[in-house]
View: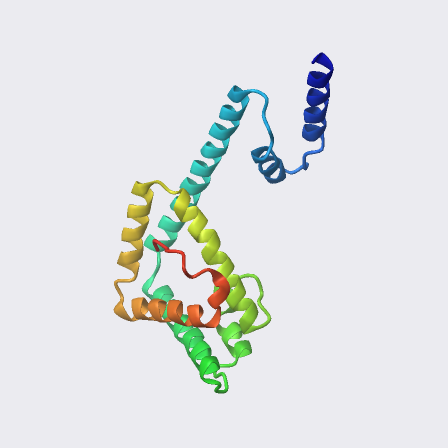
Length: 188
């Protein structure tokens, strides 16, 4: 029995020694680690939950600042970018020539879409990826944070044309990228 216990302890030490060197890799590895001590497992889970709360708080503060400080000019530019993107998606869906071209669109609005996409398909993939990441953060927020952020978003989208453009873009993205997991519900 002592020999088996020693072997198990040796295996667990080796598993800990072989963990990735970066913090994200270690946390991910430890989420699948079979802790011997239930107290150690509980402390690790508390740490992970605290990290999630801190990340959600940081995101909430940044999103709140960005939304509340949006100028009318920024909103108009966003509305124009969404309109141009919607036109491109609708034209593509109808089999028409895309105007503005993707290159013209990126020249005018590329700063709004980081990641330097080289094609409309790349841009759509990046937008879908960001939506999934935003949903994960949204799920990590407290109900109070969600309510506050929802209120800010509604205030920003008070501009009916911008709200219409956002809804139009959501419909067009669903048509253009049906495999992106649109069946999930998004509180945004």
